[in-house]
Length: 290
Image (cartoon, rainbow, N blue to C red; front, side, top):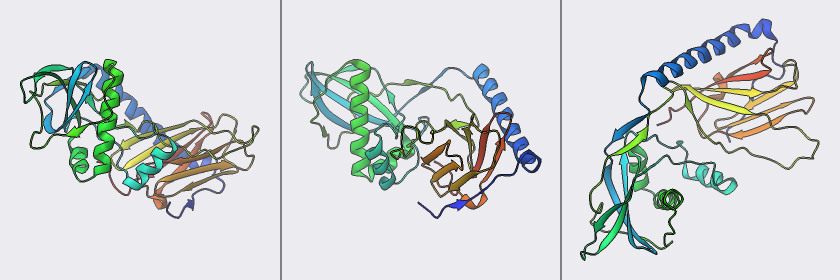
């Protein structure tokens, strides 16, 4: 974690933070309007044509199974984290890192010996696929997630043993797939994030609810619900490149959150909304997520 900077030992009240609060409200109102417009004007799904990548062979109780790992720029990429950061996230919570992928319908094919088999097409983001080609760890992770996804979706029991076919990027034909259209044109939900929970007494500080949005490609917004607080006096906030820590002198709340994005802590700002009883944080990003 980079050196943390205490942004606000004691945040000023509404008189001094009014301009910042107004900007947050304006951004959120604009995003709400764009979301409503997108939901009424955009179709619920979009048809894509995945591009071939590589093919793995395994089997189930019904016979041979081939999984075509494909890619498409229309699939959203996962969070842009290093392999070390990813390993840390997976060690703490295996559900903390999600790989968006489209799982195609099963289609009957013939293998190299002319025998019947079943093939599935699984598509991931094209940029992430290119990154995966240079990492055995990411490739095996994608294969594992794809296998588990197919097992859950189609009630399969696949053999844990598999191998990648040489000189054969796919088996059969790769069909078009329908994926859900994006519902947020400007704001993107980051999904589940790893939250570091240290052991605390039963009567210790509460972990507040946290909402995160990408308001723009280079700006991350956060809302932290603090219903037990009447004002900002005594709140403390520390932000590193990919970490946010918040507490208060009454020890009512404590939040220690890992964020898989590089944050510009020097330019980050915070404001307490007294009516909503929320701490709002604007965090410019050092690098734009891909």
